[in-house]
Image (cartoon, rainbow, N blue to C red; front, top):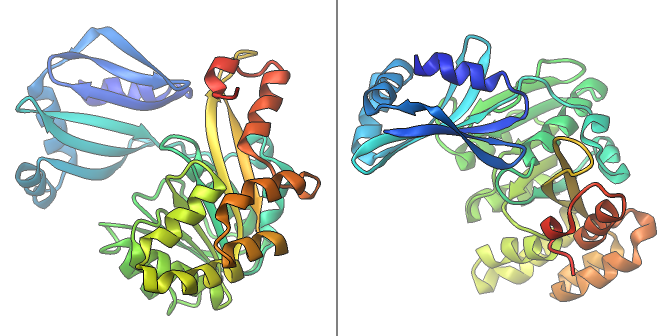
Length: 337
């Protein structure tokens, strides 16, 4: 019964997440807004039955011991990323709906510079933003173009694998943390021995993973990664601050050498029509910005980006103002003075 209802909800293309709690109505996020199905209250037993249906015995024991567990579901043509957890002495679920169709650059209305990224041969490209801002979708679109146009080996390391890519012009290897590999770090370390041309790391979570990503980018690979940061300068600071003080000068030098761009994005509700629209900040790592990174003058990056608008640099503030001027978003949603 619960699985059938989840499937019906997942058919609505505007949904991103489904929230299921014991003795409460099922809730879902549509176009970024939370809504409820008042006539569908879930029992604790139905949630427990759902977990027994989709978790292996070992995973179910892990959930009982730790009280939370991440896993993926692929069944009956649907794919979900699931977080199970305990609250008020009962199980609860949050399901992220994973679409099977990879959108195009035009579908996402991505800025011009992003469309040129598949032609890069080496370096580090970072896509950042809050949870649910479309980072994985943007990266899937870029990887899809590379897969169709470049002859090489693409390795993705994800938790879980969200978009499935079929081998086309490139050979593609997709590894899921927990299923195919122990961790991002171990998979990234192994990938350097697997003849890669392009490596996608679903999340740069810790010092070792970031260090390996920098090394891979420096040694002739094109590396993609994500972080939960809200601007290009804060992304640079986040990476450098992960390392102890005695290593930070070296890391600044590595970043200046290997970083190609930082894309920061947000998704906002459209007021001109249904759905959501992306707002972007794009920092292209040109000579001026490389020098600012080396000299630890991160606070000046915003000014440098403002002066380089004609070269594709884009500040989030300007992207939001354009969307407001075009009548696409409500000024109250944009947080722009």
